[in-house]
Image (tube, rainbow, N blue to C red; front, side, top):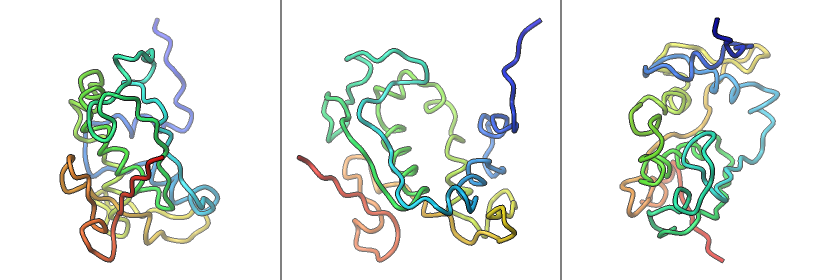
Length: 174
């Protein structure tokens, strides 16, 4: 008999599906008035990035090839007031880094890892048809902005390209 990890709230079944346009529990968490509704600043820790969950961190598997890292550790912290935007930018970095994609089949082989971002970026017109609420009876009209950069060399998003809305990526160096 195989022991199964308890699912608790059954969240994992929704996160590992190879489907787009489906409900996402991550979007429910972002919409929750006591979680996403009270969060002022989102931080993405990219001080050192492991190539996959549970992997040992070594110099060979955690130095990134893409600019601006250029075979150094990521040594970065991303911050945003927009939970969808920060995850969108983080996903762009991860999904375009050969050090990660060569060792992480989830990013390389599963194009649906961004389902929750598509769903969140389109709240009000969700592909799944789900109505996300704040857990207090209110319907959510906006969870944030999802977009991809223009290309992964320039790493420019809408606001970097002169638009009034969208994501702006600013690189601060010491």
